[in-house]
Image: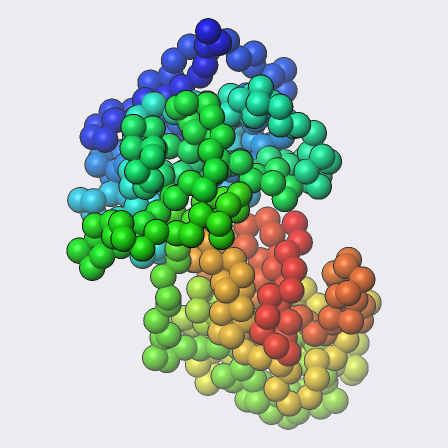
Length: 403
């Protein structure tokens, strides 16, 4: 019998116990989903002693290991989700080559009723070998996939009467193909029901089943979703003091033209603005000095100031449209999160805070490489981690992600 690498998670108190396997460690390094699972669990339970794992996901190369930068584990490393019933907190931990970031709070509405991942399950690299043993090609191009990390993995807990004894599944995505590999029996199954709908008391409602014909080979239903955000009653968005900034420039910088708007906003596209220089920055090109002048606005207070970094380039950008140049920053984040709801957590923004740099530019030529997007030049940029997200400043719709 072929030996395997497996893990045993205990519902209360216990950490993962690796079972010795025969898999050869790649020469590059080994960083599968289970390589540092014990350390991840120890880390989260230092802050939340009763935390239980409810989700696990990541991407890998052909070895099954995450190809990632230890300086930025959340970018391309393994991501583990936990829930602490005692604290009623959902937490995320990211890991890359043994470097661990977290736990970071997540703002999700279904964590408390997401089934706990417990029991024995194989590691993701063995799940890949199981696929190969079943005759599935591991050549990414055979699935219409390419890139350094063509294999995506999500560990899910099936609520399906057929798999009560072995409910854990690896959802393995290669290009356009999705395989549901039972993490205990080593078998690929079809029409797996991952979640039942929930009754008001949180118990599974087993009456309305998912239509297997519609769900066939399309992967798991998401384990948890970002909750709808309540709009802040009073938010300081980019355009709140736009006209005041323009009026100031007409008086103090006659002939200046607005080239860009910049700020570090929260998950509602708003800035708290605690003092001068902490609000939105408006960049004006002033022909008299042939330089970019910065005008800061903070809750109605407007004035010039020095900026440590000016992102506007006369070679790359041109004047923003007169009047209101497109849609405001709050609508921008709405459009971003409609496409990338997972960004709504404490991992949003620099230094793993819930703030992210936002910039509005009119590009001379589109920064986007796809030919059908070359006409998109009026864009908001939102930087989260190592990725830049582009949102159409005229429609508020998500356009592209650039790493």
